[in-house]
Length: 92
Image 1 (cartoon, rainbow, N blue to C red):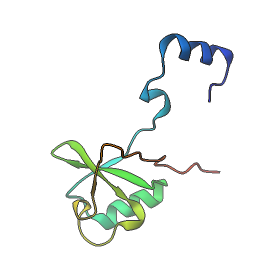
Image 2: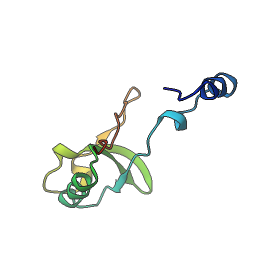
Image 3: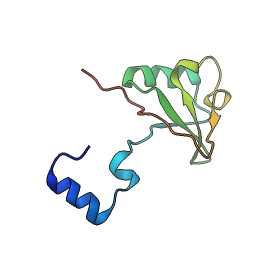
Image 4: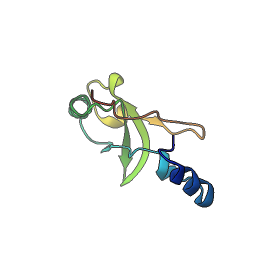
């Protein structure tokens, strides 16, 4: 939600981009050990993270689903309509 009249004016004049509303997606190599990735995700408060294959994010993992194995064993592909909710819980 815009913080001021200026923000509303800026949005109307220049449009809104994904960068204005999106959060960065943390990501891990598909060959990373899933238990280690889960530990990092828990420590940093990430619910979801991208999975990289040959340098590109090709899917995602959900922290609660990670078990023994590699990230690629738990990766889900992106669908055309995939929307990932905020990946980091707000700390109180």
